Image (cartoon, rainbow, N blue to C red):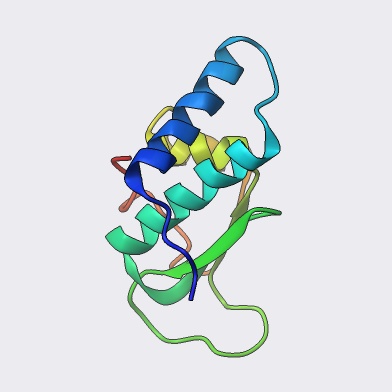
Length: 122
């Protein structure tokens, strides 16, 4: 079983990442990982399911959104992006459409549009 990130810990990690970005510094890897995983956890809570796999390498991945279950190999609906892009779209600092149009989001499959479930409310 995956350990759930507490709200206070997730928000503290998001705040620390935002402070580092504002200062032009690189956030600590463990803090960045916590922030990414916390937002993936919130996405899973908001849109439970297993038809779309959202990947934020190397920090985490989650299957979300109701639909056909996928069990083997690469899922037909995959969304992948880097940590900075994930934090931006998940918190609403950037729109899904803007990030996707810029090429910073790789989305394949008919269910791979997360505009309907983002931003989250961390």
